[in-house]
Every structure is written in structure tokens, then in C-alpha cells.
Length: 341
Image (tube, rainbow, N blue to C red; front, side, top):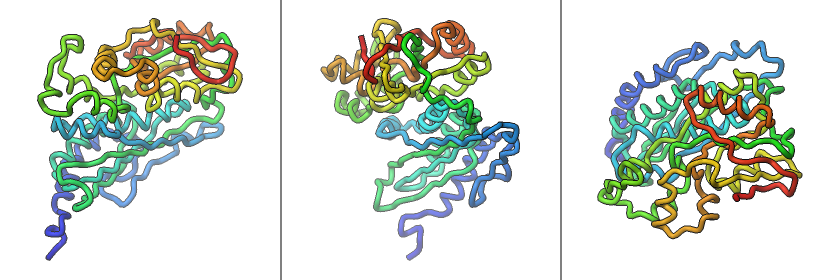
């Protein structure tokens, strides 16, 4: 008896590391010290020494049951982007610049090419976020997980000068809400989606005219990473008064998280185009509209609050970064919460 016969292939682990090295290298920043393979990742903080009060912000998350879609489609090079996005988008909500990222992959069996494909996606997400992938872990769990399955989670650290933190405390009635378009479902609500649609190859390969693609292609579309968009706003000299990442819980849970007491958000449904994937989910699942807005991003991956005088310039800055933005509502006096009208 040996470790391999027990279900853990150390040689496959070595092979995985070799295959992923080229992707990890592409994410390097000047602050990264050392290479891949050490017991820890080292990142120099010398570049932030000129900040008055450098403040670290962090985020950790996974991809949720969207992973099941990757299994069914045998497509593993995009869920890594989702994992990075879920972490760094939370960091930029506080105004932070993502610095570095670490991933954790738990699998039933280490298939080196599959692990490398996952890390390729992680590295692509890091490149989009401007963060360095400085380490990670791949763990085989024979007997705990099926051989063909895995789970993916990540952890990101960013930095901001304390005076520039986005806290929402100065949001007031009359402020404008700007929504930044999502790429689709992102990484939330897939447990419901798997009840609405049959999760079979035939179902996922079905082409829908309203989507312009197959169901699987629409659902596995990676989560948007908004680092560049918020950086563009900051570089334009515009103050972001509040920022909400629309993830699990949709509009109703996430928008109030950026609001101070005494104000509420009014979001107009007809102020932007809702992507057809959400209409399809609602129709096929016979889901009430309120539940859709309480589960999904409904086409807006971020909602930001601005002084009315800054809204147009903010939208221009977002568009300059390559994203699409809309004025989607306003802030009013009232009990903290959100109204979709």
C-alpha cells in the first residue's frame, strides 16, 4: 500500500504545478518576491509607503454551484475568472486596489490538465483585476469528493488610503444611482437555475434565438470584473459616495448595504435593458418578479451612488474603461432599503 493507491497522486500534483506556472507568471507585479513553489507568497509593500494611512481590504469567496455547470459542460477555464471576480469586486466596493490573490482547489482526483485549466482562468481573472496570483493549494480528497468533481475558492488582498475608503456614510437624498452592466447571471442563483432547467448536455446545448447562443454558453459566461471601471472613475477625480456589488441576494439585500440610516434607494426597472437570460429564467421557472430581483443581478453587476453633478462624468469614465453604465435611480429620504419601481 502507498499514498497513490490510497487515492492521492503526488506526481499528478507536481505535474499540475508545472502546467500552471506559465499562467501564474503572466499575473506577476513588481512587488512579487520569489517564485511559485514556496510555502508562502511574498509581496512587497514598499509601493504603498507614501499613503497617509495605508489600509488593507480583503475578500474571500467561491463560485458556488456554478461549478456544476463546468462539470456538465467539461469547460474549466472560466470558473477561475468567476472566483477572482467574486473576491476583487468586493474589494473595489471599498475603493481598494487588489494587490494579490490566492486560490484553493479541492478535488476528488487530481487531473493535471483540468487543474491547469482552472488556474488558467484564475490567472486571467487576476490579469483583468491587475492582481498577482502569488500562491494557492490543490488538495486531493479521495473518498470525500467524487473523482470528477472539484470546488474552487479564493482570497484577495487590496489596499487603500484610509481617507479614500468608500463607506456610504455621506450618501444623501437626491444622489444619483448608476448601474454598471453585468455579463449575465455571474455566480449567484445557480441552485435555482438547476431547478428551472434540466442540467443535461442536451439542455445546455439547446440554442435560444433570444440569447443568440446556447443555454450553456449564456450561463457559463464569466462574472465581470469591475476593477478597471472603478479605477477609471477615481482617476477622473470623481468621488464614489457608495458602491454595491450585486451578488447573492440581488438588489434587495446588496444595495441597502451601502446606505446610511435615513435614506432609501429607488431603482427604475425600465432605466436599463435587462439581459434576455433573466427573462428566460423567469418564464421557464414561473418565478415572481420580486424573487428575480432578490436572487439575481438582473443585468447590473454594480450599483454606485454619486452626487448629481458627477453622474454624467462618472458614466463617461466607466464607458472609457470598456464597460456600460446607466442612470438607474436615485436616493430618497426614508427607511433604509430599496424599492424597485
